Amino acid sequence: MNGVGGATALVTGAGSARGIGRAFVQELRRRDARRIYATDLAREGVEALAADDAGGRIVPLALDVTDEQAIAEAAGHCADVDLLINNAGVCFPAG
Image (cartoon, rainbow, N blue to C red; front, top):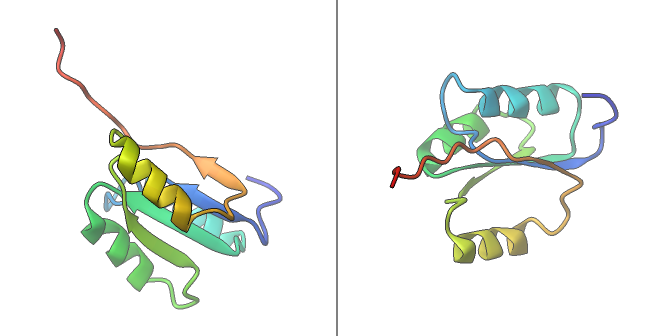
């Protein structure tokens, strides 16, 4: 991840306490991204991640990536995104 200083990023699937989405958010913060929208189906995980950010650059958003309406609403909040990390895992029943 080079050249993200000053960029705005959106990371899906960032709410797990030990997941790769959380690691992406932390690395973007370390590399001076201007704003990081951290999203997950469960808002609690991304709120905890934002609470650890003293600089206030992490913006927590609840987002169900399988819901087109939710995606449209999130897009309205995140119109300034330069970088998307589409990390959310989706599992549908077989059949």
